[in-house]
Length: 480
Image (cartoon, rainbow, N blue to C red; front, side, top):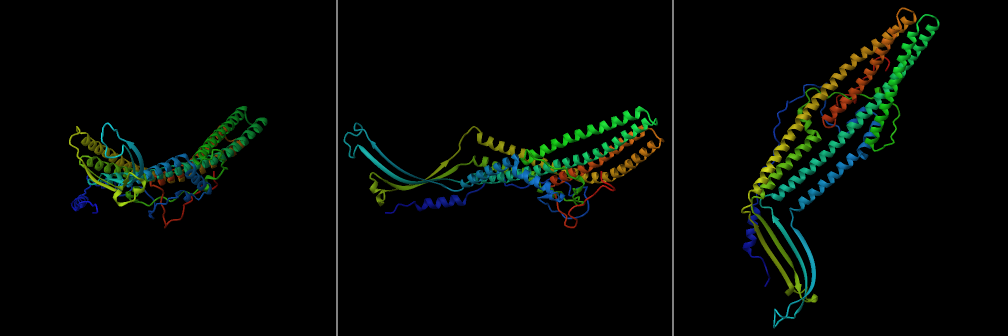
């Protein structure tokens, strides 16, 4: 007669499976009280996000530096390894949704005591061979396993978004460091011209001294001004070497050497459109990561609540058993087992309910962090728009100041050589022109850096199909 499970047990098991419920709150995105638009912005245009935003600057060296940074930087390798760990955790959690099947083969010999069995009806030495397949499965009646799987999936997505945060941060750091390097190249060019101008002034002062048209004071003042420019150049060279070393660390190329370049060939990308919707910050990877952490914390509440209810476990085994190896495959050697276990919590001193309270409190903490991330993102976008807009307007004022300083220096030199003004007037004009040149260069660097800040704040830049690829603003007149 064939062994079989009672039909009533099968029907009861089907009823249990049909009655499975998932305890704990289902995730719903919390509302955020944010303005519908940003107050600052540029001309109307598209609102797409571009992943390789650094290519807007049209600089092959920058493209190579960003690519090397994302490929070689230790932080990127660390973030990638964390993603792989989270993927493994998700596979482990997903595996809990299925029964675990084990197989085993055993062979043993044992002897029973003759004193305990005075008249044995079987041999005292008893061999046994066994082949067995066994399985055990926790019936996910309250949704504990599915909530664990939900939390693991959210953790994986959050880790992937955290990796995107690292990639965006490294790309931004590489771009801004590179812009700083190019700014120092431009400042060195300014200082070289300033050194040339002050050296010429020193020669003129010496000629006038030898001709009896000037005093030694003019020579000393000219020498001091020249030495000051030389010190500025040396300090700028030091800063450039430091930035080049920082780029080497970012890219994983510690011996990196970058030839001098022209800051003013780098375009300033177009400003995003006016009234950019605040929902755009939802694309920021840090905000997405914070939301996935909230989803995982919400699922953990369900895991803790499921522990308050009974757990149901199913076990089964199927195999053969015989004293002789040759008899293992005959029908009479077949063995099987099936069982159902119920683990009912009765009293635990409030430990399980305390875990529910802890999970709920952690969810509220993560919720606050998520809301803070959104508020921070909105503020950073607003500040980025303001900085880009104001630094662009400042550039025009600095250009006017620079043009006036150059003309003033030219006229003061003519007046001094003609004997109409003291050398102090020339020194003042030289300092003013040098400061104006450097301020113009530094503002251009600031504009480029602010544009990177804005792209980072928006989660990766933007594209405007109605506008040119980039709006290149150059220095009116001759470049510094």
